[in-house]
Length: 483
Image (cartoon, rainbow, N blue to C red; front, top):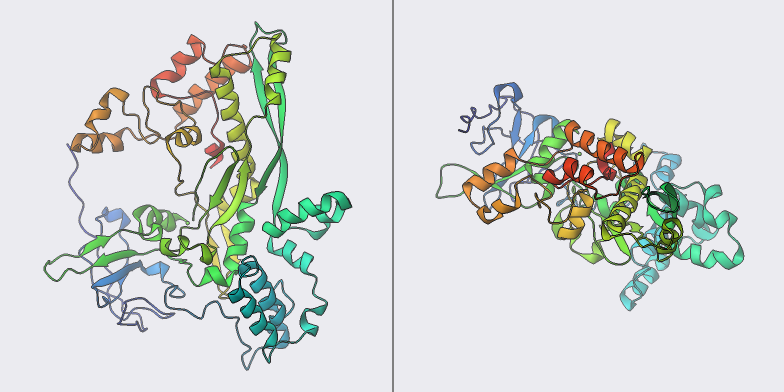
């Protein structure tokens, strides 16, 4: 039996001053003018009552509902001039103006750099014309860009120390390849990932052996977030505060909740009340990882010319030479599929742990205080909200076995209950049996790993299966377990 629904939330009677564009119901930099209790708002317990602000409906009957403590500092879909550099005010000094284009020394350097990163990679007559307009304008001065240190600026955009970049120490023969990575996007790091490979006690050389996998190219997640907030292209689409999007149907008494963007979802709103942000995954022989920020609308994310997708990493697979290492330690005996599947899974999650570095964990736990392109300081909490992958990749990311007893990456519903999918009972069971990274699960995985790495059992030995099989677990610690 399900519990009764709690009472709906109440709304603060406070009436903040401000204006709102009645044509679309989207707030400018000021606050809404009216507050009324939205009947559509999801019910919450009395201990979690929130003070809400409701904007007037636009011509389509759409309106927004904000938490009173999370009012927007700008309207991303309205502020069409957000991407324009800020002009000098009467009270600002020359130093203030130049600092607003940091790391560029002045406005002309900024404009030329903006053309290079956002237009220069697309060789076309239209983009060439934009370059001519830029350097042919009356405000453009050649001396502003003549002595600009572009390499240093690119390193600062990627949060790199110029003295530590590969270009500072590379030999002439290697410089070209490294420049390709830097030109593609600054901030790339090349790492070696080590995998602990276990050879059981029947092998020629039993015990765990470290196997290095080279050339894992990746970027810092926190540096990408910092760069995004300083990018005027992103700022005009970026939603710092989430909201509920609702509709007032003319033929119904109650409002309806509209779902479409990540930043209007319950998950995003709940996370924002504690803290907020992101990502996605993809696959191939060379497996690239891309990242979107959930604060930006999906219609813009789907436009390649908007440049809202960021390339983060290239996941490596076990090289062919790995089999030679196995034959050397087993005495020319090739181990079974379970062994190679386990090693592949260990490598993938080792690379994920490299991505979720100490800087990201610090930001995840305590947040990032950053000044955006609008000059306003924001306290941001990165969150990995969703990933896009097909079933085999979801299984790998979730650190579970493929088509096991409980085949779903999100719940523990047994395989023989799959025919009930979509039924009311199935929907309820998905909530009750949802997968989570519990202490009990961690103890089972840790016990299985002790059998394999300390007692030198085979990966799929009955003792290991007894611990893990019922919930389709595997003896691998997920890369995201630090979160």
